[in-house]
Image (cartoon, rainbow, N blue to C red; front, side, top):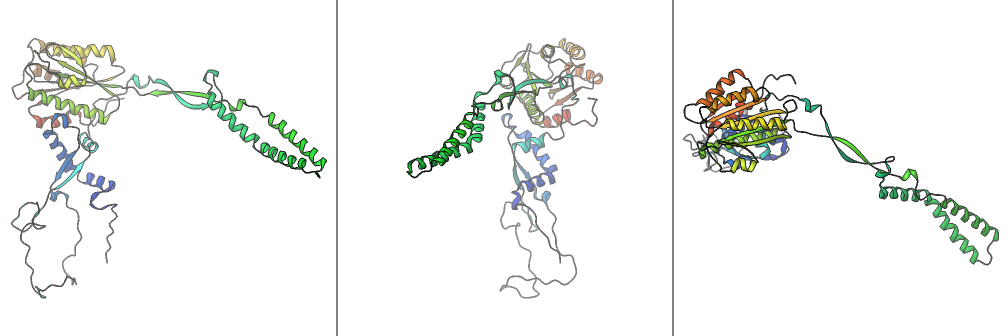
Length: 425
């Protein structure tokens, strides 16, 4: 006889253990559903959770049944329609009698399995196996910055740090502990003396003994100091290391007149994915936003995504501004510097060679990784060809073409997939 024991904590996948087991078992199907969902979301809704649908055939579980052969006895409910030896016809219609499953002429059907994943689970699946390439330790790891924090009290210290309230509390506790038994005996002796003095037959020798004892107890109590060096408490301060960002991402977006709304929407989706990836995977990574047309400007997150300012196209203005910001705020020997540039490829013909010169001389030699996406369905122009020639000389430059929304997530994963080998830290 075989016994099967179900050790699941809860039915219907309600327990955390079963939920995580389910996510692991069907990760391939879930990741495909997550990657497909990113294309159907609005720009402002990329961060929420997701309703995942998996075909029933993909989540089948092992079942136990009797093998062929042998003699089996089975007990069925009684009925008034069949007698031993009758053959029961196959049920007609879909499984479950009119459910929402697929129609089938074989009398069988199956429903899709739908469940919700949280925002955290959604982002974990979205950015699994991704990383910032070439992330290395810099001198900043050895330059520890400290800040002073309160760290309780200590018995010795600078008089300026004396905590009066805490010291008085210690004094009260000490005096209470040391004087407790003496005060208790003093009260008892005084009551006993009062009774003897009121009694006319009171023994004078006993009264003298009690008076002497009371005097002795009072002297002992008077010798307990109001405050002692043992009571003093000083505020303690410790130096704690402050975590400091050692990576910065520059986001350079073309907002010129040639960038129509659909193209800008694709660029924004890419940058939102990038921002979510950085905040979900790393801590203390700074992000610098740069918008450019004929002129480049460092902006905040709100202006980067929602400003409607536009103009002509001079791509080199953004690269120049990035170079200036790096020299001013982010020394390459102390920071891991990254950049992501998005454009439709349109640029002044004379400006594209200047971009190549700036990148090859001022940017690519010190930057960890530089990505460029060209959002266009047309033939590539001079900027793409310039970047393509640079990519042959610099392995930290990656370029990709995005033609539609469906290309965003695959291109993003291609840019930031985990490397099999890493440089020396």
